Image (cartoon, rainbow, N blue to C red; front, side):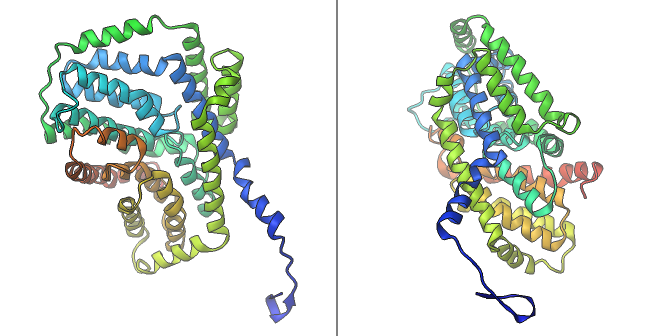
Length: 416
């Protein structure tokens, strides 16, 4: 029984078994879960065909005439692969990391000597580039669709692939541009290029010429990119595009059904992401998100909407220190901070893009924030205390770019 309007008592029927089960599996019908699931299989095709490695080697081979050149080659490799591989760990750890380690070895760095400026430079650049590229696309990191989903639930705005790219492009690309010279100033590496070209040629030779599978994959990826960017014009949902891509890749024999079944990373992410989505939805449905949001908003109730937006985003950014997983950080805090922004009257798209960027960019604060960062940090080329220091310094640079160039860009496109 519960008391409704007018003080009258009403009977409420609870179905704890059936209702709980229905809620528990609701995340598996969420299109966000399926978008990430399909994107993982597209990433598997990139890895299986060797196309991702070919792109990375080509970039390093053509730009690897200086330390900055190699740094920018790694950044470009991450940017090219990010829209199609939604796991930053799979992309950074599975495709780009082996290339980076091979380059480090070719430059004469002994992996057993501990700290090294050359290894440290490439490791920190690669880890940071992985996070920046993750912030640039809604499909760049598994937690990004949750940000878009919570923005839709709380603000009622559509924040799809094209909106995300438009909003993130200017500040994220500028941060990426500043990354190699900034890290170069910090570490001042001295590189020996004697064996690098030979190593790259050897790996290129092992790959051989581009196969028919790679050409078919390229055509599919370009089609996906066009349809994703043109979602407002074509009216085809991003999840439908990704699902069609999987079917086409199977029909073209780029992927087999066995590849789909054995892609344990895709299935694993599908299950935990669907569960996280249910958790996030229930936190909102049960009022927990609103309660946290209202609590946060009380300390800022006299501030202007822009000041509130900047303050909330900064608090969200540095709260990453409390987490060892980017996705967990997103699930725990994106909803409450959006709810606080809603109460305080923050510009919806401005707060959304700030949370979208900071969900990934904040990962550089610690050497354990996500799998890809942990892989690079564990090599020991940079000590953990220095990683924390470098991470904080690069974070300050990123925040300066976001709150100057970024705010100007978002003002131009009318987001506040």
